[in-house]
Length: 399
Image (spheres, one colour):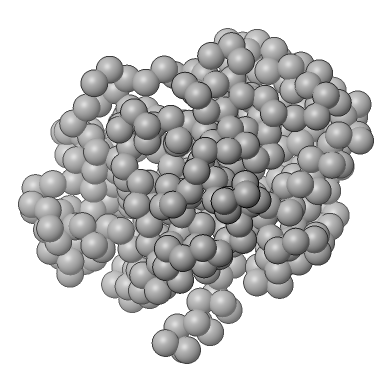
């Protein structure tokens, strides 16, 4: 199998997925962003500043940690965790936020807007806005504000205005819609720091590129520690930014399997989960053509996940493309399984994962015992669980 294309085509498509499906008002700023990003990609000064900030401000490289006790407890494969939870702000989201803040500066935009579900992208955006002296507004569903209250406080402390969104399900999809409405009205002075590998071109490509450092580091680190590539990569998939960041540098390595883990919620029943590849269909949502959850009439279905960051009706278009190619496998973990993984990693390794990351942990717990002792797994620990403590502890007590 040859490596999939490293960039979408000129119209922003990964095969039949992706593209630009936005109001006419946004076509010009998106085209401007795409053209400026193409220049930034080959600008040595831009790339050098980006890498310097990742190292000195964000705390890269993050460790690749051998979870020895957990591996021994499960039996089977040797498991490593890519510790994105140790980054400044506590998740991988800061990689993309730094890159896009630099892009906003190149474009001369002084105002930033963002959407957030679990709050980690909102915190990262508020953080970089404070660092670069930019005005910051973050849209967040009212439901997510209640279950992620500590992150709301962090954003406000960092100087951001957090706007509650009460429409619809009052979660991530509605927050994205409000951010896009704001951007449509204020494109002259506003840049939208989209938080995942979603939306209209060039965002899926640009967000992926800013997160490729995850996989680049993991590749170098596993070769240094083990002298060979891993057998399996595992990452949770909401929009899919942490997963595509880990997977992308390995796409040409045919011997490396990759599994993305979606939110199975309360089971694969309509409106009870957010696993787009389980009963989803091809459609268009919020700027991109991809797999999404919709009913027979094409109306977007309600979603559910214990993790706010995975509670979204569509998946990034490059993930849809990689699934179609058969290069990446996609499965799901239920709320119960994610909570069990959350508890297990806490008790055995002394690491509190984000509930999003716990979906990847849950899948590793399923498959590691079935593999050989000389097999290697890398699981992306995309964020830490401070934000989830109240909710997770309450749910675990209810079991």
